[in-house]
Amino acid sequence: MVFLLDTNILFFCVYEPEKLKPSVAAMIQDTRNKVLFSAVSVWEIAIKSKLNRDDFTASPYEFRHSLLQSGMKELTLNSEHALCIATLPNTLHQDPFDRILIAQARNEGIPFITHDKVIIEKADGYIHVISNR
Image (tube, rainbow, N blue to C red; front, side, top):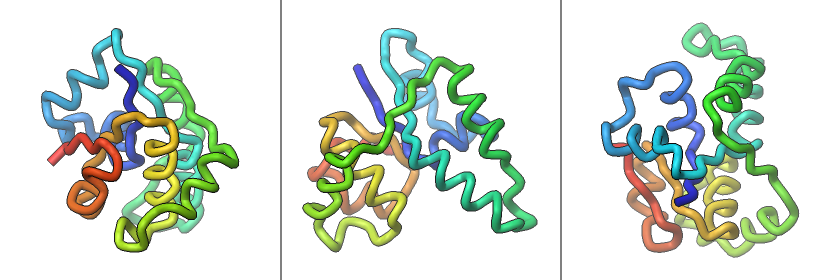
């Protein structure tokens, strides 16, 4: 099976694995599955790291390196994904990073694993959402 991971799940994988539900961790660790991370998530971490917040010290370089070292594959952002954003309902999510990730999952037709309450509540049915809550 193929999965796209939300930025929060990727962050948990790298820095706080104890926050992953056992069932979600098992899906991610199962070598029969193809686990994808989006270039958008690395972009999001890069932006957050430049804000110099005291509560966020993650390096986007280490973050990406850890994802690749774990065997995950990168899903690049393309114009089909960008066009899919135009079809997303406005009620789905307002965060631009989340909207792009949802569009990628929808366009690729793959399940999306997230911890985001809004996505879990509003995107399930529009895309296949797997909850980490």
